[in-house]
Image 1 (cartoon, rainbow, N blue to C red):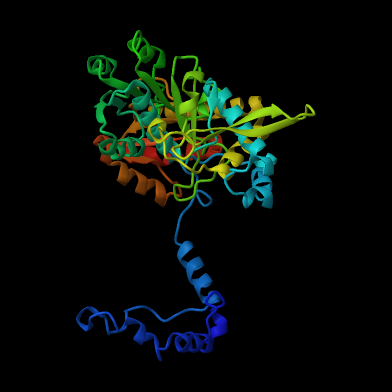
Image 2 (cartoon, rainbow, N blue to C red):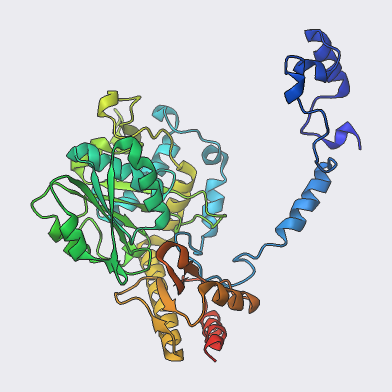
Length: 450
């Protein structure tokens, strides 16, 4: 093997010798002469022999071939990351070098295209959520929720947060991880079967409460009654935070119409592929009263001195731009490329197309649930669900998933760990699943009842 096989390691033996000579040592080991011999490793590390670039590529492809992905089998796994159609226009647009290589737009006069892309993203998410303004995106949905809680605490000057157990377990974990640093008190509100227990929520509300957090639809797939939650917050200054699937909002009454103060979520359903769980793209929407406390940045629309339409970086509320004690966030960056992917996907579908896509999710999930019930399974959800629901099983969810996998189907999410429901399977049906795939699923899973 020659040094030419390692083209990403540019130093030749001659280069190394010249550098060592320049600093006055003979060999590389001399660089570690200051380290005590008793802690210096002298034996060779137990590593395999080095490989050339071609050998590494062949090795990695061989390992990747052992994976089973949604490209190989129909998938019924959702739980926060979903298998949706992605228009070809998405990759065509975001692959353009002016977007692919763009840095966070701190210099708005030099990046009108990037600013317009963010503006369009903000506008479409604001329409879906029914809110006045949306920021330029954050890392993902859970990150957005963590920032929303911080905003609520700063605005209300309260520390107590009532967090529904219907919120995604990972998002709840993000909120709880940040809580000690903020001096927060997190109170988890249990579910009553598949929806937030409103009686328990009512009992937990007091004068120290900063925010109530509800997911819509919740992690178990059920559409929460936001109007009823808002009624519990009447005549209080408690912030009502809703974490919502933006695709579902194409059909549902918007959180803004139902009284939400802050709406957050993840735009992965629009134009962002499943990729081992990330990267995603969080959104953050508020009413005008909170617009100056939004993390990240907001792009606005204006006209220049000639009356031509233009875009400007309008608000940045992190500590570098305003007085530190007034800042609610230390967020610096945003997910501009993924936000653009979501904007292109939404624009490609159009309003009616997005609504149809959501309707297909609703209808196909309902079809699968009905077929499974007719086969003898029990539906766990008591409330209306969107594109996810839970089926009770006569065996563990892990065992059921193995049966499905052996039949060429990627099953659902086991609720054993997060909800202590080992025999319950959270299933997701998107617009990509065909009737034949749904019927095959029913036939295979129905076999466990025999």
